Every structure is written in structure tokens, then in C-alpha cells.
Image (tube, rainbow, N blue to C red; front, side):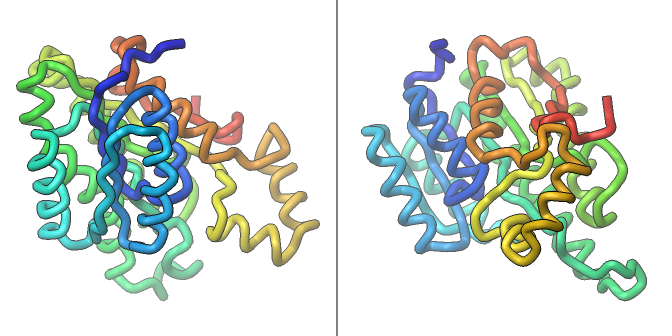
Length: 260
């Protein structure tokens, strides 16, 4: 299926690995030019090398989303090159394993840092590029949330931040002015995704039998998902064919979440 994205310009935050890189690959395969950012410059360079094999224009620059000035600098760099972006994928985030099991023993900074890395970063990138999308009368904003952005569970600081992202996308999607300008806003909510170098992989290596029991109990498919499976959904949500999908929170979790 031709997604109608050839020639579009996309920005994927946290695009150097995992879901972000898989999404960037899916978008360049559809003919998009793609900008990615990450704090890890070595991983960023490796991702850029892979993406440039597509023959599309790739912008890759370091960015610490905890620093508003860094976000402004990176967005300005992309804008100088392209004038703006047609597609924004707010992928950067995390914090689901931060803090302690005890709520009382977890410092307040964990709550604020997780909220900033997820919700505030998405707000800052989104508001920066909305004027360009409005002027073009076309745009796609997709925010990668979590099953915990749709239901209870998980550590509360992470759940709160992801629920805030989900609420933001729904509320912006309901805005007649923005929707009338051809801009859609959606969240994609993954479940357990196997990403190299993350806590899930560590859990598998430390206790393979226990990890299998965990997957059997939590995941109806009996396995974790892959970044590519999430990236494929994100690419479709960005497509011309997905113009009626707006304000949705789309579960990509193999059926593991409890929410409808």
C-alpha cells in the first residue's frame, strides 16, 4: 500500500534506537526525509548511517529533551533546513523503571523528571511545529505513549506522564481550528516491546524461565512485541489514508492491556 508520504518531512524524537529508529526506517521507506535526535551521539551516528542508505535526506543531531534550550536549538536547525516538518513523532520518553517500589522513598525529582521527559517534551516539540503545519494545511502528530497511558498500573510517575500525553493528543484532536487545518493528533500505546539494551532484555537474560512465565501471564501472544511492529502502525497513522484517525489512543500491545 502506498501511504502517500513521499516527499514529506518527518521528525522522530529519540530516533536513534528502538521504536524511534524503527519508525524512522518505516517513514524513509515510504519516501520521507527524516530528522532524528538523541542524547547518545554514538548511537545517533549509527542510526543516521543506516537511514541514509535509503537515499533520503537525513538530519541527525544531539538533543537533551530535559533542556528546553536544546529542543529550541534542534527544532531551529530542522526549520532552517526544511522550513518545518509535516510529521512529528514524539517518541522520546521513558521512566517506567525509575524510582523505587516504595512511593514514599521515591524523591520528588523522579516525578518531575519523568513528566518533563515525556509530557513536557511532547508539548515543546508539538507547539514549535504547529504553525508550519497550519500554514501547509496538513500535518500529523503522533505521540508514543504506553498501555499505562490508557489504564491504571505501572509506577505512578510514569503512568501520570503517559496519561498526560494521551490526554494532550485527544484534546488537540478535538480542536476544530487545528483539525480544520488538516492536522491530526494521535497516540500509539505500546505494551511490552523487546528493545536491545533495555530493562526487558536485562530481565530476560537474568532469569529466562521467569521471563517466559511473565510473558505467558501478561501477553496473550506469549511474546513481547518488536519495535518494527510499532513503527509500522505509526507510519500508517501518519499516512494520507489515515486522515479520519484523529484523537485516538491506539493500543499496539498484542492484547495485553485491560482497557477497551
